[in-house]
Length: 153
Image (cartoon, rainbow, N blue to C red; front, side, top):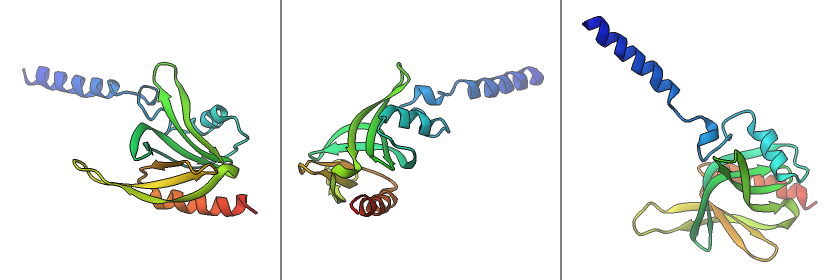
């Protein structure tokens, strides 16, 4: 009887490893795979050759949460895209080329019933500001500061 219970337990453990969602079925999509860079660069089709920063996060416009998705900095600009779990592709919701960035900074979104979010903010030449709640906020800000100084030369 003990062998039967042990066999059932082992079978359940083995099958539970097979039941987890793969990257194609999650909101993050291919973010943690080596296929992310070539697929994402092919999606934006703007001459980007390298991804410098990527993170799954939220996008805010006018202090309102707009979407969950992947924030990405390439050598050509800044992007925010969502993964389509049915179509297996990224849909770009926010795209700002390196020449269109006018200002970057930080701001906090205050909430009554949840933890406040510190946002990396990016403004375009028209003054439209979009924020991203990044865990790697300081790293992204540093990368953008370096790239903007190179872009504006």
